[in-house]
Length: 235
Image (cartoon, rainbow, N blue to C red; front, side, top):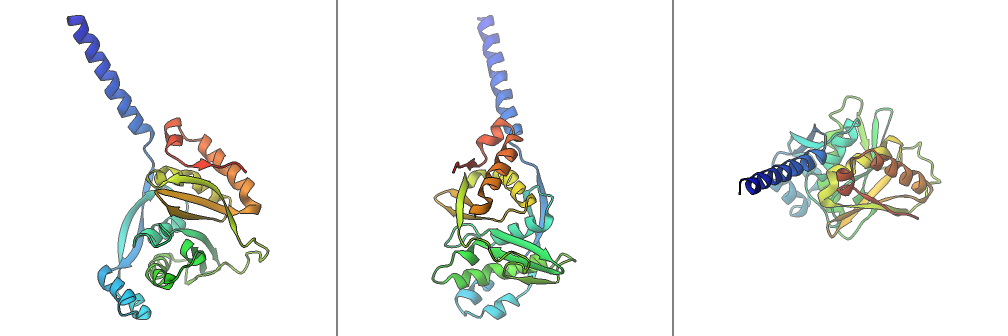
């Protein structure tokens, strides 16, 4: 009986340690960013959808809010991403930054809702644009925000994107570690969500490079992290 109790105790200890190591291995490095949000969100929303006074809504008081996000060396992009998601999803799913480039003192920005419109999308623009814009304007090197591509972007870019990867909404934190490599390589990508999943799309001319970049990023993650990251599709 003593031997049985001893074996049982050892098994319990191994089980507990095993669960603990799994938790540690999937832990993601984070950081804090500051976003600007409406001081009175209900009033802000009512002025947009009820009164439909979009100009006055954008002029309402905004306050700073600290948000925890996955670690990134690009603080400006991470702040803009956090701001885009701050007021919740739209009809198209989570609102995401699909393009951000700073030229001179102007930040050129596009959200997924700027590209994928629907009837009434202007109300979503009115809710999200001021939050992202005011968040970007807190950085000293940004004096203006334009909702368009930068003038230097080649006009020969394809018009449509193709899907190359996807991840579960619950795995977003670790998926962002891999997506960070796309930003580092200057690859423009967008996201479309639904049914608990987020699909990642890029222009066809950059698809091979994007797949290679994502697979390289995934190879640097632990096996446990890869299980909770994104899946890259073949051609």
